[in-house]
Structures are given as structure tokens and as C-alpha cells.
Length: 196
Image 1: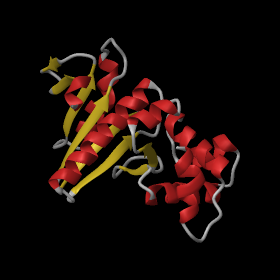
Image 2: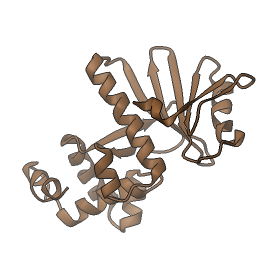
Image 3: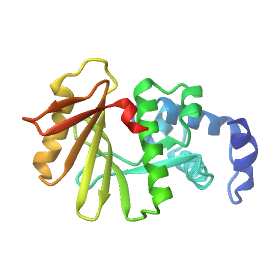
Image 4: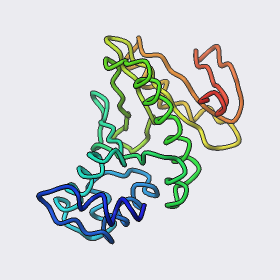
């Protein structure tokens, strides 16, 4: 982290990067529920344009991954760190660590299999509920929701059911503390370990 903010950023020409601010941005990416450029700027009390310059530089260095909202979703692009260990070091919550783990596994699989046709996004309702990750390839989309709680509650998958009502061909997967089968809702729930 120190090398990135104090050395690597300075290798990018055309903008004077602030090392202290850069580290604070990485910390907010790890800890905010919705780490968008606007929310990071608001949390730090900084000009959004300055925050965007730093975020773009971090993307160039592959320190951050930007995930765009799905078609018909609300919200702005969100950012994830390139490593779960770094996310934990910077204070990420357990749900955020799970989301980061899933994203990195999928990005690795896409890279290894050279599947450039797959597109990653997230879905956010107007009330702020989110589906962590959507994977789209052609006309097929799979929505994946991560449950970080130890106990399962049907309300946790309500957004998935609503999303499937809106997009009937969409597949829905839940990652939770244990494997369950909800035949009535046509939802498969796999344990977190399935991410490996």
C-alpha cells in the first residue's frame, strides 16, 4: 500500500497525486458500503474531480476494479480492491471481503479462460438494496447475491426474486453460510466455500 501511494502513483504523468489522500481513498474503498467516486469524495470532503483522478490512476495500476451498474439499475460505478488481504488490512467488513473474494475469483476465471465476452455489473434498487454481482454473456445474465449473516431469512433474497420478475430469463444464485434448496422460489443457495 505504501509503495503504491508513495511511489507507483508518481510514475503516472500529468497529475500531481497526493499520497495521503490516495491512502485515504483506498481505505474508503475498503470500508464504504457503496464506494463510488461521489461517496468517497463526500466522506473525505474533497473535490470529486480530484477523487476521480486518483481512482483512474489506481485502475491504471490494477489496484482497483471498477464495476458498472446493470441496465435499469440505479447507482454509480463502484470500486473494489485488487486483493482480499489488502482489503482486510484497510478495514473491510466481512460482507465486503466476501464480495471482493467473489469478484476476484470471477475476474481470474475470465482472464484464465480468455472470456472477454463476459461483462460484470451490480444491481441497485432505488431504495438502495443491492445484488453484489451480475455476470452477463450475450443474452444470459446470472445474478449472484452474497449473504453474510449466519441465519438465512427469505427477505434476503426478495431483491433476487424481484429482479427475476423483471428479467424472467435471469439465473439467480445465492452464496450463504450453508447449502439450501428453495424449490418454490427456484433459488439455489451455495455455501461461501463454493467461491473456491
